Length: 150
Image 1 (cartoon, helix red, strand yellow):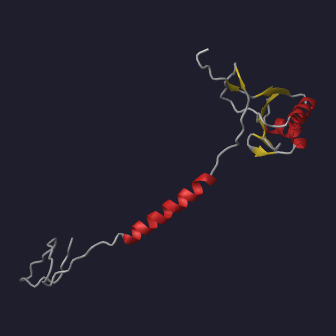
Image 2 (cartoon, one colour; image 1 turned 45 degrees about the vertical axis):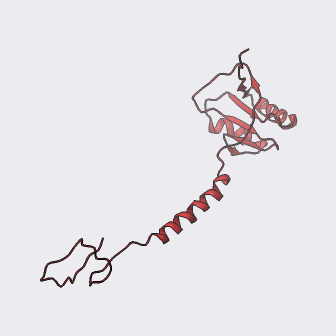
Image 3 (cartoon, one colour; image 1 turned 90 degrees about the vertical axis):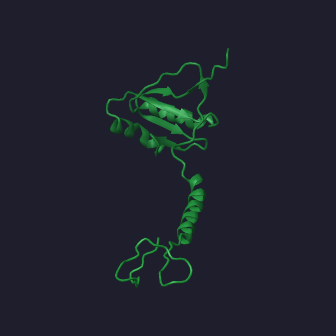
C-alpha cells in the first residue's frame, strides 16, 4: 500500500492510492526475504537438534500376561542395559539406594525394579540384594503381552 505525503493536488492527500510507473507518488513494499531467511535457518536448527532431545530413560522391560496399573508415585529403581542405576529417573549409586528410598518416599515399604531385558543379571541381583537388606519388598516392573487373537 502506498502512502504519499506530498501529493501536489490542492491539499488533498492520496492516502491509499497506488501509483505505478511515472508520477511523484511513492510505492512502499515490505521486503520479506530476510524474514524467510531467518525462518529457514530456525527450521534447520530445530531439525538438527530434534533428535538430541530425548526424554526419559529407554528401558525395554520383559513382557508378561498380567500387569497391575497405579497412579501414585512409587519408588522405581531403573537399571539400563549398561548397568547404570536410576531412582525415579535420577542417577543413584547402589550404596545410596537403601537410605534414599525411605528419605524420599516416607510411607513406601516396597520398591519397583525396572530393568532392560538385555541387562546382565548381576546388577539386577545386586540391587535386589541391597533392597532386601534394607527390609524393602522388591517388585519387578514388566509390560503386558500383546494378545494377537490367541
